[in-house]
Image 1 (spheres, one colour):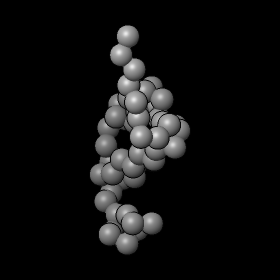
Image 2: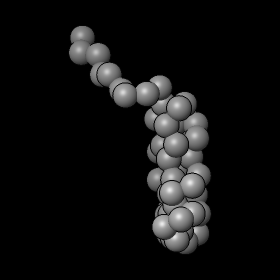
Image 3: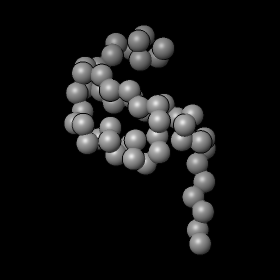
Image 4: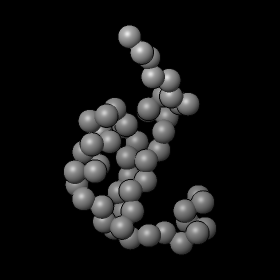
Length: 51
């Protein structure tokens, strides 16, 4: 059996979905075990994205 290694545990990875992405994308991340998923309706300016 092959074991997949990740750089961080999935609960430590922040996923940011911009531009009003479809609900199914957020659902797929959640179903895959990512618990820190944020969705925003539009793009962020560079300073806000950095934060």
